[in-house]
Amino acid sequence: MSTSAERTPIAQRVTRGDLTRLFEGVTRRNVALQVVAGIALVAIAVPEQIATAQLADVPPYVGLVAFIAATLAFVVAGSHPVVSVGADSTIAPLFAVALVRLAAPQSSNYLALVAATAVVTGLLLIVIGWLRWGWLADILSLPIVTGFMAGIGVIIIVHQLGHLSGVSSGGESVVDRVSQWVHQWSHVSGWSLGLGLATVLVMVLGEKWNPRLPWALVAVVGGALVSSLGGLEHRGVQTLGTVSVGFVEWRLGQFHVADLGVVVVTSLTLVIVIMSQTGATARTTADELGIDDDLSRDFFGVGWSNLVAGLAGSIPVDASPARTSVTILAGGRTKVSGLVAALIALALLPGVGVVRWVPLASLSGVLTFVAARLIKVTQFRAIWRVSRVEALLALVATVGVVGWGVETGLGVAVALAIGAHMWRSARPHLVEMGRRPGSTSWEPVTVSGVARVDHVAVLLFDHDLFFANASQFRRLVHQALHDRPDTRHVVLDAAAMVDIDFTGLRLLDDVHHDLAHESVSLALARPSADVVRRVRSQSSLVDVGLFDSVDEAVNAVAD
Figure 1 (cartoon, one colour):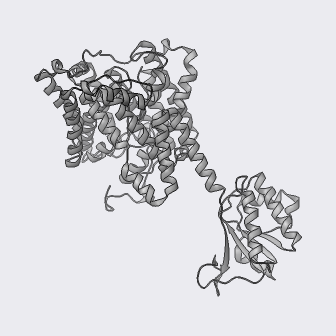
Figure 2: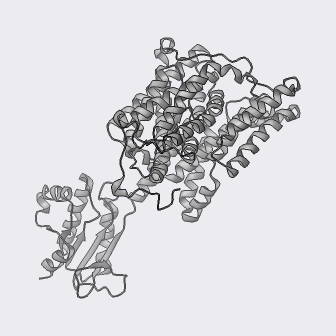
Figure 3: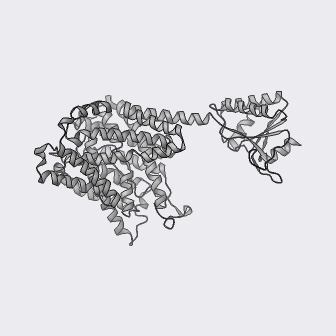
């Protein structure tokens, strides 16, 4: 993170989201640094995109096309100056697992399905961004996202066991794959396993020493040199082999409309994950760069990245926290870094055939390292220290993804998020307030020096009043009267009650009726404009007093 001296004051921060601001922030003093950052970005992106293409069951060049198309589109349409968008190992298993059931990997039908998924995903994200629905990034809580991402990390690692150890590994589920791998342990290639583990070790130690350097590229090139010079192909080490070289290709002509349902469901799954990861990436780095985060515009940009990638015949894309961090560490602060990286990748694309010498074990090592970073053990510990319940939700999300697959796991995660929200909303608090003598300040009666007003119960309701908590609200008011039987007036502090729905209004009417039977008056203090309008729409609540402050309400009813 930046030091406080480098941070831009909040009042001076800007958003960047149109073509006219493409070169905003570029000066003669920093332009060279932006170019260097672009070189650093492409150095880590090339091996990562090739590895992700392997994970997505598409040719290596398709991964590079995804990076080029997505980066150029986001540079033009996105807001964040350095977020890196491209093929991503987080979402690759999501669409690969779903679409491989419809067509053979790397077949023309499969590539058409993948491209169609990118297009549909892009259109959905463009609509979300255009409608300014950036708040959807918060649909899943951080603990649930942590558990969900950890589950994906486990799946990626399990999928890499075969290539990492030089044996075949298949199966529909994680358990099946692990079981098959264990049964073939006696056939493990020591050279493959050594190359894979060496790749992981280089990336782990290299990141600790100097995270600005492209350690993935170093590890993959090193693995290719060791494999070719040592003749390891004859010792059980598998390489990418003959690699097709291509460019932009229209694939949607081979898409069958009958598969649209699967594509749409897969795209909806991707949208939720992409929003979560893009939102987290943009927010955590915007503050460091001293800019305002505009998530809606960034979703719009990532949507265009997916749309362009799909039309170019490539795969769905996502924002990458790792590549974005590398760009920032290398000094990237403007969109020039992404533009430079895309242009260099474009120049390298015709020579992508050279990767035929790269060992599959080395690519699996890169993916294993990236996947391991998705399993944030320290985050789980932090969640456990704060809330055992949220830690359990995170664990359930992980088990859901690992045990039942990503689609079901995502459903579990969303259900947990909705359930957690409803659980909190259905458990509101009603806090009795008292006046601090000699002032107009009202504070909880548990605070020292605060006194109740005779025969007046001032109650603060700390939530919107709606169907999920309306009955609980009524019970809490009854409990308050039971605790203070001498009450003649109830003043409801509605400062936190921003909204009230039909059910809440009916229960408020019931409470008013209950109090009237006890000869107790009801008044609302500090209600919002919406609450005032809805209360006044009920003729039965016409005698409920509405006041601008608690003090005004208490003085009025106590006279």
